[in-house]
Amino acid sequence: MASGVALWRQVADGIERAIADGTYPSGERLPGEIEIAETYRVNRHTVRRALAVLAERGLVRAERGSGTYVEAQRLAYPLRSRTRFSEIVGAVGQEPRGQLIEASDDVATRELAKELGLKAGAPLIRIEALRLADRTPICVSTSWLSAERFPRAGEIFASVRSMTKLLAHYGIRDYRRASTRITAAIADATDAARLGLALGRPVLVVDATDVDTGGTPLVTKRARFAAERVEFVVENG
Image (cartoon, rainbow, N blue to C red; front, top):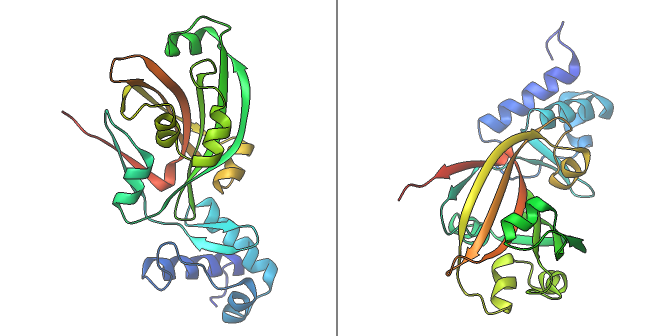
């Protein structure tokens, strides 16, 4: 260990070099705190601070009860008229997963009513979900659908864990993206915890509305993507 440099920084720099040279590949679990402490001849408090710094840099993420993992390479996420999370993730050899966080009744605000072609105050179903590639959280999404057109949508999503499969349950086999708007923000405490991000990390916010083949709005959503885990690819034509 070099003199004059804080021990936690030396540990952090050493792990960062090991990630860069492939000693710890993308997505792999790092050795435990005790093993790292023995390797660098420091105490576990020093290791924890080093890992916290690496998490703030977006290089690793901690999973409660499982360990600390090297962040996976950014997922190339095409933005096109037909955007399907499961297809995008599956195309790169990863397993798409969805988890229902909460489903609840809601009412259409003026903005939501405009997006969904409904009257303000119309009953909606609000679905909050987490989407992962393998075991890596990619985004948290909030979706709104007409409660009259899609009764029990929350229960169906809990079973199928996919918006595409949910719509198919109601006989909608194809749909397209009518609009997409992208902004940047800092993850709030709730989204940071769900995405396994350090506080203060950026998210890419995607507001989008999907319509059926006849142009009738089906669902409008706001997804918060971990900025360090995706790169959006805009496809023309």
